[in-house]
Structures are given as C-alpha cells and as structure tokens.
Image (cartoon, rainbow, N blue to C red):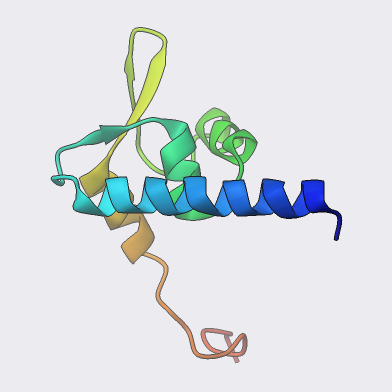
Length: 93
C-alpha cells in the first residue's frame, strides 16, 4: 500500500471515528447530515441519496435544500437489522 493510500485510509478512519463519537454522544432529537449518517451506516453518500430517491432507507426531513436525519430515526432503522453470528442465520429453510 502506498503512503498516499495509507494516509487517506488513516484520515477516513479518523473522520469516521469523529462522526461516530459525535452521533452517539448527541441527544436522540439531534439532526445530522448525510455524511455523518453514511459513516454510521458505513456506506457512501451516493447510497444514502439512492435510498432517498428509491423511497427506502432511513426517514429524513428537508430543511430548505438540506437533508437531515433525526438520531432517533437512525437508531430505530438500525435496530431493524439484528446482529448475526454467521451468514447462515436468518436464512429461510
């Protein structure tokens, strides 16, 4: 891995860690932009935009042109996805 790639990965990890800390320390009524919520979901902002366009994903509100996500809605959405110990769990037989 090149030094540039290592620095980019390290910077991305620091940014994600900062987003996670900000999100989890905030009150449940707090509003967040799609960048922070993409870090929470570990996905791209393009995925967030596609989910909104398709009508799925986490509920959101628009304030002017800005898209915001309420922490309580994000936590509720995340709770729908149970942790599994293996990839074979939850598979219909």
